[in-house]
Image (cartoon, rainbow, N blue to C red; front, side, top):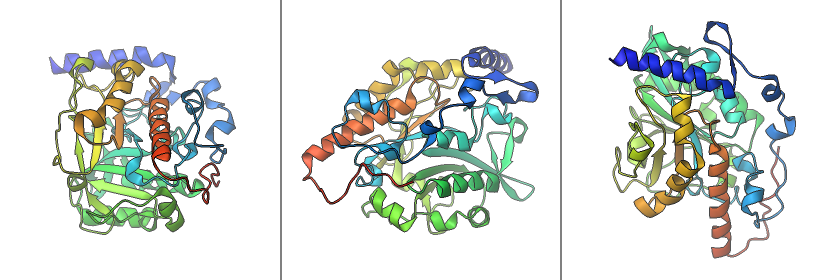
Length: 340
């Protein structure tokens, strides 16, 4: 029965993917020409934002969190970050039953700022793997190197990694060292206030890392269930989405809003339903009222389905504007000037 359901979902994924990409041979994909030749301006960081008086129409034109008015002045925990579930498992690189269409670099280029990554040990080395290496695998150091390259090219960007980890903490530390990411790690002491983006950028400590195993063993490798709580990650129907807490204590300050469907695997058809504006928007906007916690991480499958970056962007713009009204104006800092 399970195999039948898996095959059905695979067929559904293949059929519904035609709206976004063409499937090539060997499980690889080829991006349509009109998508591949997206205007370069759409990927540039540094487009100035004039003021905090950004309305919802203008918010939809913003492409990246770094362009949001007040971005640099906001604390890390005052932003809602778009996060990709099983970010390494993607159709573009030939993974079976993927959760995403594109690889890590493309996700970051499109405005994703959080990556959920699964790590297993293969032949003594940490690999990015989802459930089984048969479905796809990649050396952890390769994935981390992609993240480092993107962050070095974009010095305003803050990135978060949340690991589901089955590798010893020592192997993880060596992978970070080998990929050159140790120097970018932010170290957060539990109970302290989170820094502003401006502070993280000025110190070049712009990578926040959480793990469900071995957290605290080395600096910057944070225990996710000491800092975060989450909604449930196993949901089959849109009607079953709720705000009930799953893992993590109710007093934990950061909130992971899991928002994806699995029946029994992920699929574009399911993502279209989950990511629809009339489903995702009330989840984001209603989270704080229902849980007394800000939705720090909005976690989705196939982020390009629906308007997930736009909805998260609009939510942040609204929150930043409200915060600006409630706080004294600091004219000494220009939030609209973004450095390349």
